[in-house]
Image 1 (cartoon, rainbow, N blue to C red):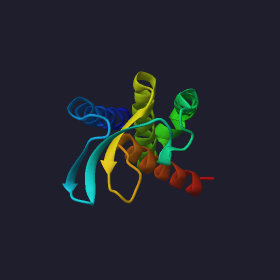
Image 2 (cartoon, rainbow, N blue to C red):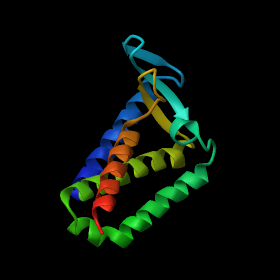
Image 3 (cartoon, helix red, strand yellow):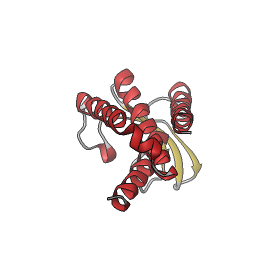
Image 4 (cartoon, rainbow, N blue to C red):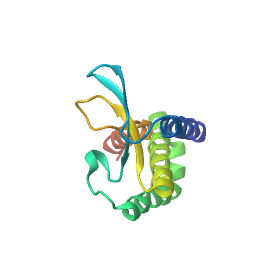
Length: 142
């Protein structure tokens, strides 16, 4: 289940970014619900809200650290409750997806634009849900 979910989320993330990258120019915006929800293609060279802009090696290092942490705790994760496995898979898929972008494009491809929130992508969603589930596990465990 863990690897299947990780792979499915990673593929969805990369396919959506590929479609945006190949059918839009950076800065293009397509309104789906005018002034509410747009598909807006941007290249984010920072983290959430654009913080730590142009710190590519730092962010790639974070991805490597997460991979090492997963390797160290994989037995705990795979023996843990279902929500921990799901959370870890979502977190890893998002980190790998955005790490792939940083490595290949020197920026993360973002496109979900709700106009009242910074523009984000599928990997950002999986990271947020994954971190929440892993944090929940950590709070509940001894």
